[in-house]
Image (cartoon, rainbow, N blue to C red; front, side, top):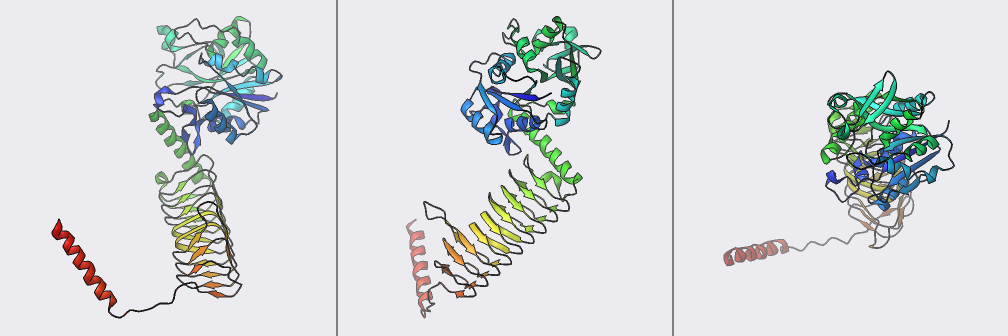
Length: 450
């Protein structure tokens, strides 16, 4: 049976106290809605429909950035979860498979749980996700008879006996798409909140002789985000998961609690990550790499046996080949380093290609921006760039070439040539003493005037 996803992302999230729609708040470097998309994508859905509402244009853009082929629909009025799901009806009018409803503010539903719900659909018309709550609070309650789900009762509408139930509604629902929309068309808003509840489809299904059941998952999977405190708690949950996965996969974390991962970080075995390393989105680190303390990586690829840091910053577009080295206080942006190349300290290399075994001296800057456009620097194999060289792009330094320390290089340097681009030094006898005397006099006069 083919599957489609319906992801509800229309809520404002008033309790976040933010102008940003709730589902766009970042978790592990990606908006919450992207985590819901990622969870559902594990079952290779034929279609994904995202229901947007508050801040719809921003939500649509963010969702399509993570999955360009999904379909966006809008819930103009916020009339409840059942009403929100109905907005996907037209988009799935010709779809004959199952639909799974996920929530854009619930990022931890696991692929295994979704697979289990799909398996349960083989025996039941409606499958709901449930969890045993340590503190049921105001969750909806699942009323069961054995493995049969009789109904879901919202807390506001529950009796005292129903409120004593600890099996709670996790929100996720699976059903044949046509059945789901048929049931939703019969839902009313005759309840305390005057909303159309998605959960009402269970009792309607049972009244029609259709079966329903609940799949039980860990409570942690159903962790929803409603406040900034919830978001901080979710970030801790995500980082704990990512750190455990890294350790299990053969990565050494010297101080795991100080390392922060993005949702998509990939690190190979036998890599060593020192304290206070931060991974932004889209980072791949191969095996046997050393990432030294206080480094920040984003949108980059680091190949085997490379060394990065300490205090290094790799920005998007940075590519490090095998055995390359980035030292302390070095920043790379949209730059490719060949095998064995070194940028050891205090340098900025942007929009550049560095050849194999080239050595970039301390204080080197690729001057890549003219105030309007970016320009490229190319440095050949085994070139040696002297300390404090300014490379004014576009410029090429040939293989086995050198630049003298302190040079400003504005023209191409041929292979094997030495380029010197600095003014001739002149020594003015006694002038330093005269200047110091003058400056001391000016300083003293200013103090006296105060």
